[in-house]
Amino acid sequence: MKRKIATTIRSAMLAPMALCLAACGSEPAELSIPPQDPKEAIAEALANPDRPTEDAADDPLRKPAEVLAFTGVAPGMKIFEMEAGHGYYTEILANIVGPEGAVIMQNPPAFDSFAGKQVAERLSKNRLPNVRHARCNFDELNADDASMDIVTWFLGPHELYFMPAGVEDLGDEKGAYAEAYRILKPGGYFVVLDHAAKPGTPKSSGGDTHRIDPTIVKALAGGAGFELVGQTGLLRNLDDNYELGVFDPEVRRKTDRFLLKFRKPE
Image 1: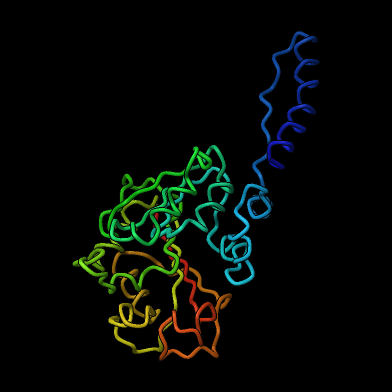
Image 2 (image 1 turned 135 degrees about the vertical axis):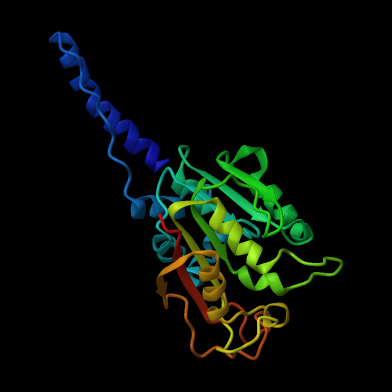
């Protein structure tokens, strides 16, 4: 709403200038509205009155303003959100990119029992018109080649090693990173966030404790062709007990989380 008001005010200020030029017999110069500052767009999205209150209650833990500033998201971008879950970040991203942008929220079909109802409610009545839900495994992402500005994978890479009951897998590990690379535009960013495991922990921890050694993520991303261009300790917690699963009451919602930013070379 604030963004609409700001645009209306700027348009109202520019209109008299165009009329004056026309009255003087001159062709009016094309007048453009400066693009919105990304930080301002993030702040407005977080303050959106239509945002679910339960989402906002998670902000102190998730630090979405800082996380999204790290991704480089801006109005007008196209975002592919791997493992969007219930859509906490989907909601924010949709409002940041605005009507000129788009968000694809992806979940494997095996997650329907976990997130299906919540996703349906979030997208009901076309309340997020620039969002499309894609039900596909991680190694078969539903997007065109070089079509996305940013691909995010928040709290998800460890899922490659998790086998829900009755499901063979959620996607091949190398295939998943290759798919993220495929759908990104050259120069685009692949941003990964997950629960940290101790260095040297085997990848099988993804199915046991739902953690992963960030070294594994870096190696797979590098193998797919990505360049590591940033990492931050924003969500670190060195007091975490890495032996415990992330759902254990002692560490739940207090885990050590790593946040990495990769770039697809131009």
